[in-house]
Length: 286
Image (cartoon, rainbow, N blue to C red; front, side, top):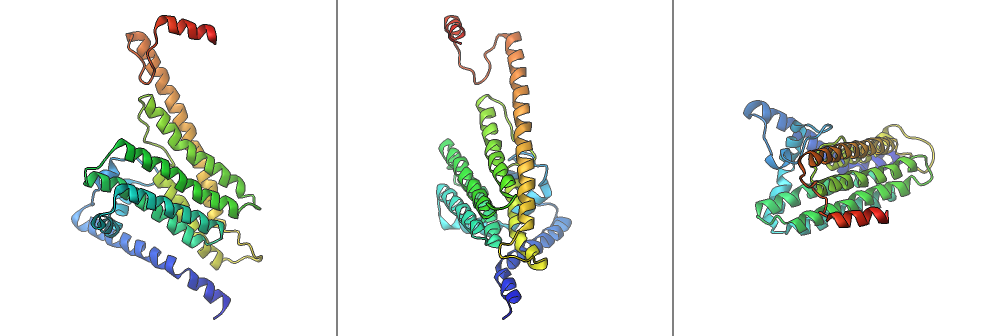
């Protein structure tokens, strides 16, 4: 078997998964044309998305329904699904660091899919808790960081290291600003590059990158993985843009709260009440 044939053979599993999603899109389009769009209330209630519209979000929910039925029937707990999603995300980072980009991309997408199922599983079983939500959100940071760290390691001798590190910073800031906003009573679910968009954009770019390299090969032992590099640049720009936009909206909302509080005398949400003497003492110390 030639080297080229061996290379394409290693991409066969990823190609089969791509085929499943392509056939699923055709089937979903036909179903929607005949019986109307299938709606997933959980996904639609999770906030608006600019890059991934309602149609694609509902298609995604519909096409992964076999996996959802399997997870629901297995009896596995929501927290166990959260841990599994994180482990798969870490595996994606290891695969990326070793240059197995097709595997890394699909593992990252699978991690994102499992992340959507743990919350749905908790709601179906009436086991939604604040601790579970916090656990899910915290482990998401490890999964996102693992794949970006793996990509940064692979591109450590390339200019792509810079956007990889910028993306790592930006993707950590987006959820942090949201959490900070919610601690002040400001709801912030919108944004250009939220986690579903990050998983979709980076996962597809990393997964498809070996196909681009196979079609347009370059000389040298270290494959440049050009599509993955483009995905990292896009993620670096959009995630930091999203974070900066959220910071601006948060500051605007806090100023409006302060003006409303000053006019009505009501306490500002998220701000602890202090006595006049304590306030004076704090001013003296500063």
